[in-house]
Image 1 (cartoon, rainbow, N blue to C red):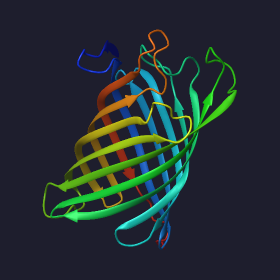
Image 2 (image 1 turned 45 degrees about the vertical axis):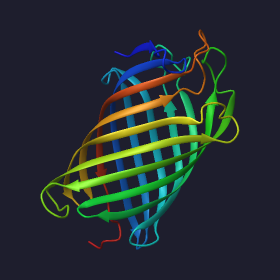
Image 3 (image 1 turned 60 degrees about the vertical axis):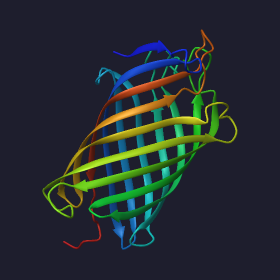
Image 4 (image 1 turned 180 degrees about the vertical axis):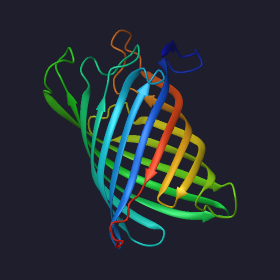
Length: 249
């Protein structure tokens, strides 16, 4: 169950909210030309070990390979947030959000370790309903956000990762809001994750990771006017499945 506790006296006054996470993620980059791929992604996020909905995400984009180590992509994301926890951000019905995104990713190697970095810009339109949180969306609030992710992959059965082999995987991603309508919520969240992966083929992988999420609410708690920070941890199951539509049968 989620739980909440005030911060210690050594910290600035805030309310801490704790939840257990269970995230199921599918990701696929499907090659349609020599240097082009279509990105597809869906995330089903639950709290309190699958009992309650947290969020869901569907993403569609276009990926361009610029060189052996550089890719650029962009596209559209539909995001939905549900009501959960003692200090719920969503007062009633699920909150919809539309996003556009653009990113650049870099791939490198450090000995046996594969490293990737990604910088992503997001333009967000967040739906707002009436005071009770029920009924139709009355307005859309625009926000900007930048994200930086560093990911590492270590093969466990040799110098390189080959088919039918296990590997260790880890990443850290920082989310920073900027521009109008962000207010004091400049630090949006941070995700730290690590776990075990298995590569069936170069285009099919399965990963089970521990996930720790620190997430700052956009608005203070209505009753106490104190900021709310979620300190969440749980499991993330990641399925990677890529298709190559350029291969001739």
